[in-house]
Image (cartoon, rainbow, N blue to C red; front, side):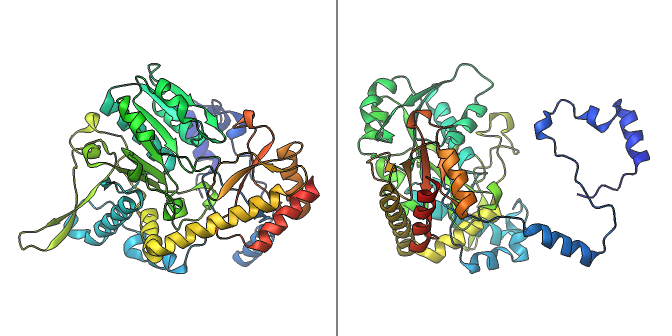
Length: 443
């Protein structure tokens, strides 16, 4: 950002607010979060020279062959997705407050909602949220409102970042309690559910879970309903090409991270929160909802519906303080899903599962390595390694330019020295063989 303030301007501004320096102004911010001053060259550069300088610096960037997953996945995005989302009527569109002037945007949102409902086998979906974590937290929050209870039971395999976000939502009150359902071979220990669910608002579960394991959801909804609680399920949308959808096993709220549907990794965002629910909970749904209607002449039209929320008339009584949506990201997901269709999504999911299965076979044959769990997995799995996983990762990167996965010890100390390894449709047989060689050499 270019800020055209002179030193004199800055001195006058600091004097007006009673600060002796800029450093004094931001002294409450921990030093580790402050960006160091940029070391710019003393000589001035014209545009061509600056471009050449930046091009040279960019060559220092490394792009390893990466097998990282953990909630953000490298996928191939067809060129047509960017071609359509780059059109100015979408790229610069604002909130569709005036339906008569926003039919294209509203139709795109409606198609997105329909896609999410179809993927998750749910009745209703909203116009999207910030990311999977905010969708997850809002779904649990809705379950708390419906049941009036403040005990939250969650599976140990839920993405730890989702749980961090959820606890931030409820940080204002000490009344909320969190009960973790332990792992059994990497999955939810269903035998522990009846005792833990007593007095709970909900059971929050993720499948495939953070460790890549596919949860066995048979009978889980029955146990949850018997306790008078609700079931909140998070699911990777691509996995739903071959796995049961949350609506099929009785989820009340179904959420997910939409980054897999045509969005780049992009250093962590912007991403896309998918949020859906059963019809009886539609008024607990946060964010915007687009509806289909007919005008007085019987022509189809699109509008924002159930608007007694957020910045409109309910304000402090609204279901959530989120009143925006990731419209351009949602459009990308809609186009991506329409391009693949049900059969294409199935083939994509099968390609992911196949790549991960091949990787698991090759890596578990490396001396000293083994699969941590016997449970079925989708496109990532936990690999037990000899020695320190973090050190092995650094060696593989330095020696072979391969990132073999995420060390899990900081998040799951009980799993020992393990790596979370992910293989999507972008990984070829040659890539996976290179991964196996990198791990062998690092060991």
